[in-house]
Image 1 (cartoon, helix red, strand yellow):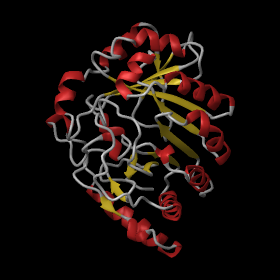
Image 2: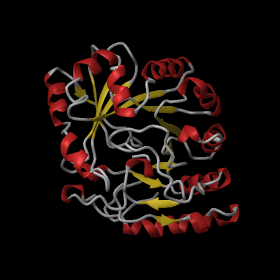
Image 3: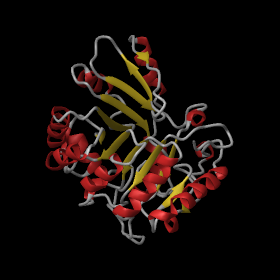
Image 4: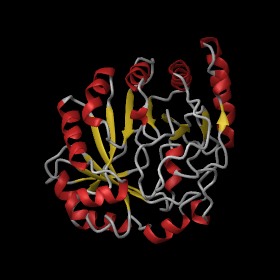
Length: 324
């Protein structure tokens, strides 16, 4: 298994398949997608070989991200190829939900196990203000369809934003009371292009955590393939509440994920100084052993923690680059 110099084991890969996004979220791409790099994204065959290589190291969970991964017309084929890879137990997808009602049936048929949808407010007018689109009610219908189709795990992600949604916990709690979904609040992270916005809108998730504990919510034990979220359950609620707090103490101690960009670069951290191309080892099935050996070599460069506390955001200009 892939293990770094700090004895952290990596069972989880976040694989970006495009950096293009059609939303204009205030905290990520306020001016919309800017085509400032070569759009020569990983092909289906390259993705198949890449996933086989990671599976050979013990990775068992793949999350497909973007940008907006649903903008790739071959997404169902990608899901199917990943799902059919020996050793891969879970195929997850993170999406903004724009095409959810039109595409979720195809994704479910291809073998999708888990779905994460970004919804930063339950209020349609606030959702539109943040994203630039009046799509909230349609996305809700897509979530209902996903549940009816038997998607095992459904989560909703909301970036905490001062002045927009940081004081709407009661609304979100009421929303999960009778829904088998996990509502996750993610602290806004500083990137290369959002310093002023970060200073204005960042709010800690610790206040929400304390409120949950005071109201009888209990922190759940993490599955070995789980991400960094702290998740809480309550006997009176069908759904769960999660918190992702990258500025909290010891956040990186339980890191179990690696990232591949849509151009085939390995990023050892969301905020690493650089990515390492592995694309040259994805050109034939006979290169599997070379790819695996390269992954083990590159992991030696993984550091103990990100450096966000010192406002060092590394090479991450905006979150759409690597899907967060």
